[in-house]
Length: 157
Image (cartoon, rainbow, N blue to C red; front, side):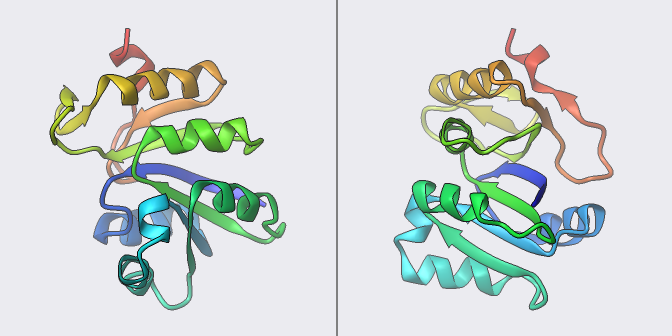
């Protein structure tokens, strides 16, 4: 199993993920880990239908997602998508090894403050990002693969 991208993006699947990141990573599978989407049949259908037909795309809640990731085949090249950093804290606590977490989209909304250009986070989300970093994963803001990665650890100090 190879996790080729672990990405935080409140939009989950959209044009930039499909074009830039799929081409860059060579992924053949997408796993979305989001309790809300997993429990909403309509949302689940929408997000899985926008992925290319040749990319296996699945939606799981956090616990089911951790189990699915643990059972990936050696041939799987997976993009993991989640809406918030807390999901990755939980996945790591359940034994999912992550070397890097990418922030692609955390937009402005109630409870969040801007901390880099168009990236916003609540104080709880910033704490989750720190936990991910403290657990040994690098966290970087990188909207598309061609962009220069911005080290989040430097922004949180």
